[in-house]
Length: 253
Image (tube, rainbow, N blue to C red; front, side):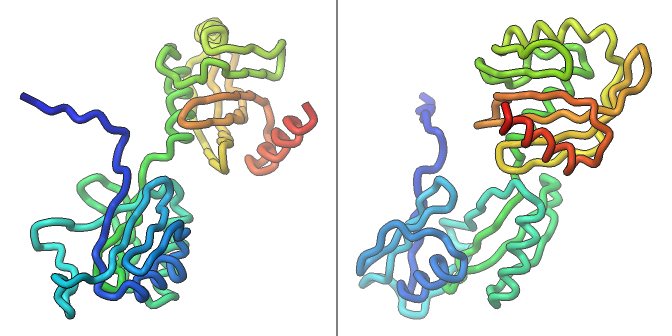
């Protein structure tokens, strides 16, 4: 019989160190993870929303032991990263801090970039590129426009859609109904640039319609993988300027 454990994911990890103070300096000071608890036998830090406990040596811990990923047990711990620039920054910072690391590499199995590094006990860590849920939501929106089907676009139930013409539309089903009405004139969507900053995603694209090609800019706010706000513009300026203009308009509204 299958147990079928229901879980949202890993709650915490526990690592064993041969020198607790040295590990505390590495994770708290060198890497900069927030230490939320510490005692004489362990400390606890947060890696995103995951708690990681590091325990000091005990009676059965060999004095000169080092981590070996080829023994049965833990191979490595991978942290997710959703920003290529952050991956590059961390790789450089690790090198600057003289932390043993691989530099940025490509995982050929999943075609994802990562940097691997080791703590003082040679426990292996990775910072590994993971899908950006904000970009994935916006990609689904444009794919829906291309296919003429927005049923699977991850709109928040209370999404707000404010186009350049007409009143604001509130609610996922009303927004979908509006978009279905423009399907007949859309021939293709060609994304030229996409930028993500915080909850915001800005896109520059060309919209091919039965009336011709329109240079367009759309601004989205995405929370927990759901589009909560969408604002299409017809703005020919560079994407950074258009994104700033959208933010200013939001502040004024």
